[in-house]
Image (cartoon, helix red, strand yellow):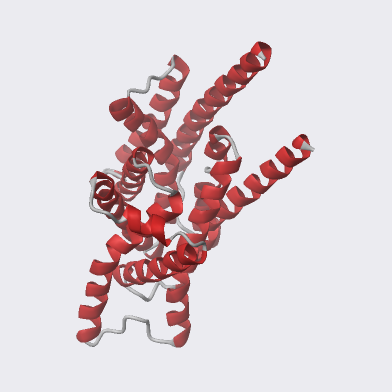
Length: 306
């Protein structure tokens, strides 16, 4: 019975992860593509508004408003959540702009780089250490980014902004003791005041803040769902799966976005891009393989002890 329960739990975790990463890799970019006529700051404001309403409603439905009130109490935790809210807001804005201006390949690169940024932040701020193979993997991936920079003549700022903003966001959320859903709701509420102020000023000037049609208004309202649902599914997957498994599955999202940009929307993907991405993918594969090998050896050692 325990084995069956564990298998069902693992299968549910994989399905939740596929839902989250599939949404981030395909559904969310397609959603924003349909809103290409709407300025990115307006989409961001609407995204914050509807995500706030959805998460507050969900927390109320779960009977956890007390947890939300506790998380909003003025203290160091709330100050850190203010920083994480700013970081995720900046990440969202750049992502929306990049998707709607034909930079899907750049966004996928950003989320391929992100795990390596996490490694660097872990070394700098958490005192983590790398083994030789992991150092080689990081160097190989960094070489891929350098190749893209040299070939383009400019820094791939979209990719780096997405990678570093989300990496720093993850670092802060790792150090803040708050439930994932409650923490995300607090971040949304912290962004809500400036979002509403921006939309109010825009509306007062006569600009449409809900788009030019009922269809666009409906798509803007759906941003709350496409924002909150993948995050909830991700949290559910993380509770049911090993972190190494989640780490490998996370590459589904940027892989899907890359295919979407090149095959569906015809974004350029040059031989230099292919070489650089190959270096980054190889580095990620080496790093992930090393992490999985270490986890397997530890589990074997624990089994022998028992």
